[in-house]
Structure formats: C-alpha cells, structure tokens
Figure 1 (tube, rainbow, N blue to C red):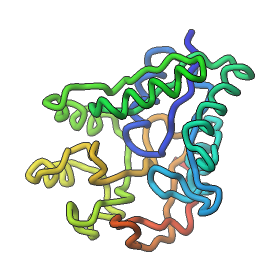
Figure 2: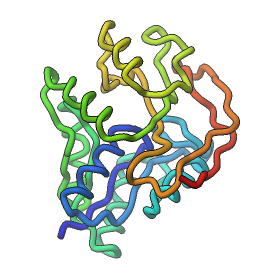
Figure 3: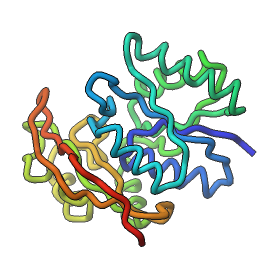
Figure 4: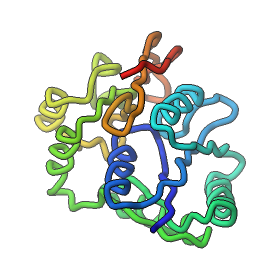
Length: 223
C-alpha cells in the first residue's frame, strides 16, 4: 500500500486528488501546506492557517504547515525528507492539471526528497470539461476564495463553486478550473468530511491584484 502525502492548498483540486487516492486504496499519511509564518496564511490561497487547521480537523487527517521562507523549495524538500524518514511516506500527490512547468517543478522537488510524485488530475487542456463534470458529481462543496482582478468580478468571492459559476467561466476566456490562477477555492464540506466548516465572519479585500475572501471566523458544524 502506498503511503502518500497530499500537497494541500485547501481547494478543489487537492480535494479531488485526496478523494481519488483514497478510492484507489492509498494510505494518506497527511496533508502538507506551504504558509507564510509572517502573515499566518497559506501561500497558495491566502487562507488563515487556523482556518485550514479546522478544515483538516473536519477531514480528520493530520496536516503539516511549512514556512515558505527563506527558501520555498528547500523548505518543502526538507519537510518531505522528514516525512519520508519518520513517517515512511513514499509518494507526494500534487493537484497540477495541465501546466507542464508546474508539473516539472513538483516532480523535481519530490525527487530531491527521494520521493515519487503522482498527478491524479493530469489531463490534456481539451479535457478540462471532464474535470468540471467530475467535481460536480463528487458532492463536495467549495466557496470561491480568490479571483484575479480583471478576469472575474469581486462579487463572485464567497459564492459557491457550482454549475452556475462553471457556466459563466465557460462562456468567458477563463480556464473553467482556474488552472491559470483566474480563481481559487476553499472546500468546506463533502463525502470525506466528518464535519462541515461553518464560515461565519468574512470580508473581501484587494491584495496584489486578487480579490480575496478574508475568513475571520470559522467553526466545525455537525452533519
């Protein structure tokens, strides 16, 4: 049985990866998330660390936070080496979809740690619609936590990632799955969640060209 760690942003892609590998019988040892210790947020989506902790608790999967400074790659590689040595992890799961440079960087980071890498969602660009269908069929619930200014209106921030949103994205120049950074998501419920996340206090802020959902308060809610 493969012992794997999931590269975890808290969004839809890594959640779909988690769902796939569990169905394949892999043993998920934990989640690993790169963060800024200064801002106490995730590097990928700007979600507060405490909120991602609650998400991991809802999934009942251990999570490891890695400070991204002073050297993002070395910090990640060293953390993966530690997991290999102390938790017998043999493979890292990444949520890359079709950007070859992204996949190559992740493969190299895993290899430097002496680990294999797998990409359960890897597709051709013309197949992106299949992933949209799969997401809608899996039964997870996510909210849009970031949109790139100029690509999407800030009114989408905080809304559900659903068929209505995908329809809008498909009618525009956006990648429907946001692979080019047009939008980001945060998963709050679904089949693997033992409890769901309640997001009770938020604000919307513009930072570095991104309209972002500032989650100020979140809790666990029984299902």
